[in-house]
Length: 313
Ligand code: MG
Image (cartoon, rainbow, N blue to C red; front, side, top):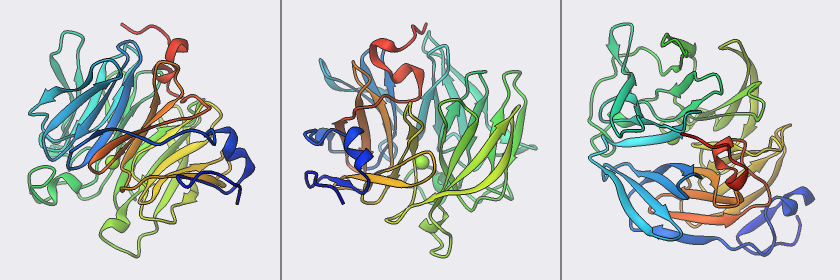
């Protein structure tokens, strides 16, 4: 254990080089019900995030503070961007994955599989070739809290890939509840969170790792286990470290799966993203609040790298 302030728990000396020991955990927005789906828009210098039960997507910027980006969001959960800079989100209420075009109109990308409705798409990433990868657990149809209660039509809780040509396929089908997902910096690996312990304590709270090859996945087994709560949203940094949500905060794993340290957060964390004007802030959605902390490493997602971010349309 290394000597750090109370909100940082360093288990490996490398952790202090990733989160500066003087960095503060700041609460930048509060008063929500269940926040999730943070995504940084470097070209607009703002953060978007979901408050799922209130059916809103919120916008926060340093200069302008908090505002409503979208009301009646359809219980929008996870968010990301594609390489054209467009917002791609998962809606529990509509049970679909939807893209927001530059003119503000919405394009539904996926809403059914083999003629039956999806469960409730939860989290989404877009690879650099334009393929859209998303998880489809049942959280959004288990109750009316963050969606509309319904009986699942799909026999499994799949992970899907929508090819750049618009062909949907199942890439993994053996999760109890697949949740957050993210690529390694070179996109050779895909990490997917298993959050099935939310309803069955016998399900291990693990992050699974898959090799990515030409749009297909090969199971490489368990990457890491979460020792408090379960994994939900995740992001990789440019060095290949994986940062995962957990009940007690954000856990940082090195590329080999060793736990380097934790950012301890007062509320259960659902998700996180990198961003900020210099690309060196982590934004953490945690139950009723959003937090921010300085990190000494940038995110793997190109739009999250501040002034180094490529220009997007
Ligand atoms: Mg999630």
